[in-house]
Image (cartoon, rainbow, N blue to C red; front, side, top):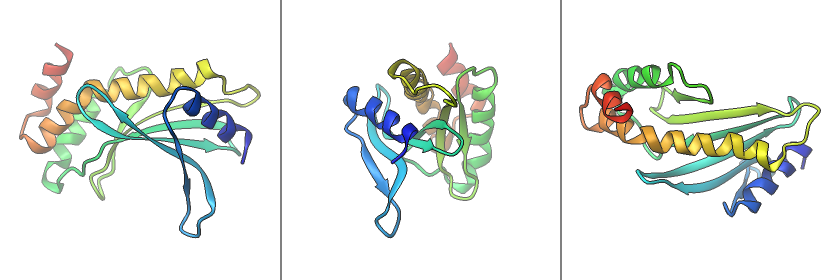
Length: 155
């Protein structure tokens, strides 16, 4: 479909992710792909987005959970504390529906999205999620305090 999408697709296929191209409601292919990931702590969906006009590759890990409305502030605090000092990527919380995801990205204007460059976007993403997901679940559903959950992870 486009240069960035093709290079992104090639990476996911070469690394054995079995990606699926996403389509819009009319069945038109989009510049997105989806693949599953199973870490040590949990499993979730990984999405690749090719932003062709901007020449950017974005990777999202979307957790298979919706934070209950009454726990969103606590999870937001956990995320803000976890994000502080992160070099590659960041957690995001959608306050309207409770979705939690992690985002990494790279600008590939004028360069090829090589295997090594894509690997440096995708794997830090999923490894970070795997490290912090237990804390997110603990705060969202186990009543853990954000500081306590983060201390357990970063100890």
